Length: 211
Image 1 (cartoon, rainbow, N blue to C red):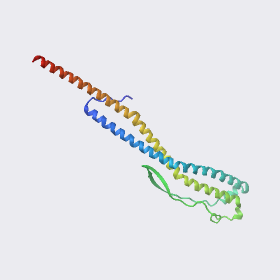
Image 2 (cartoon, one colour; image 1 turned 45 degrees about the horizontal axis):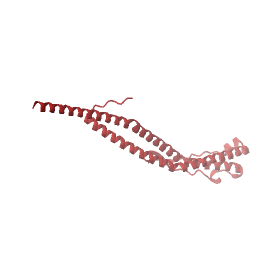
Image 3 (cartoon, rainbow, N blue to C red; image 1 turned 135 degrees about the vertical axis):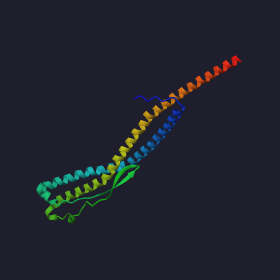
Image 4 (tube, rainbow, N blue to C red; image 1 turned 120 degrees about the vertical axis):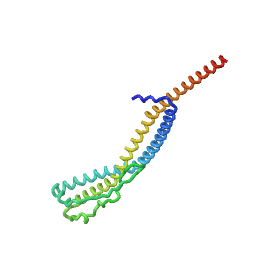
């Protein structure tokens, strides 16, 4: 869409220059914010990647162990051993990173349990069931470890992408439009000044001729 034509007045010229200065300042602030967000993302990326690798390995081990337990005890017996279910509650509090709202897990239950804490006799369950339970409890611990970090990375990534889009909008659309308006108004005012100067010069020449 073509930018609206700006009336060629000195007031509009000053106003456009002040607006351009604010746009340049805003673009600079957004760039610094984007750079800070990217640095924070790089800081979080390696631990998150390592944790994802551990989660992937944990899934493989957990499902292999539960398949072995199913082969030994069968689905019905294994489901009976899993009773009763337990509720796991975590406490989450809001936080901010570079002005971005995130959440932190500040309180969480201990998921890994001993054989006694599970309330099952080792002789009735067997080593395969205990091994499967241990693997899945470890996996649940890893998922909780990753939850807050994954959410923080996602929010910071979205904020960094939004800042980059805003910078592009300011630099590629708004700044060129204001610069074009300033150049047009300034050129028009200069032409008017030259015409006024020539008109005054002709008037002075006529007066000098009459004298």
